[in-house]
Structures are given as C-alpha cells and as structure tokens.
Length: 107
Image (tube, rainbow, N blue to C red; front, top):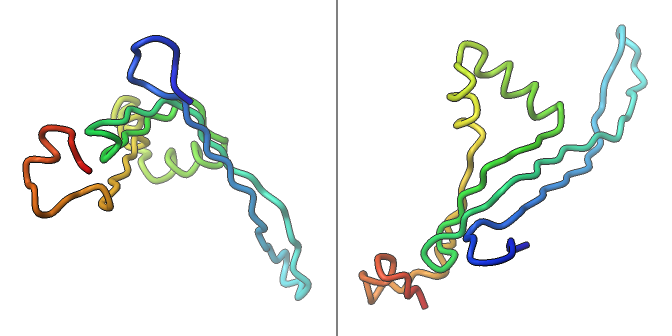
C-alpha cells in the first residue's frame, strides 16, 4: 500500500495462521492449538522493485520472543537491525544487459 505523496515507503502487513501440536505430561493424545503471527511495518522498494527492504514496526509477541531468545546478548539497535529483511526478484534481471540494475531499468 503506497503512502501518499512522493514518499518512497509503502506499508506492509504479513499474517500467518497455523496449527501447533503439544503433548503434556506424557499424555499420548496431542493438544492442537491454532496460533497466529503478524508483522506490520514499512517497505522500501528499490531498483524498480528488484530489491524490497522490509522494516517491521509491530510484531506479534511470538516473533518478538523468538528474537529476544536468539539474540539475548544484543543491544536494542542490533536486535532491531536483525528484524529487517529483504526480497530480491531475480525474474526482473535481464542477463544480457548488466547495466539494468544500476539504471533501474530491469525489464
């Protein structure tokens, strides 16, 4: 969703619903839970959307807990940087013209 005006950022939202299975105290009958994950933030498309950088602003508690557990000794800024992700659309590369990424003319 593009923001108004000439601001190059866009708003993104990712949602995921999944089933999780847990066993308690050796009980052979599994317990099924429906869980959800979400991430909302800003994306910055670059080079005609060949590269898109995603900067999350709000995450579900499960995502935040996973990052906190995996990067427990990291500073807050480093933890924030660990959450930034990107995508590359390799279908937009024309292998015949190597200048296409620098100029933004990927088609």
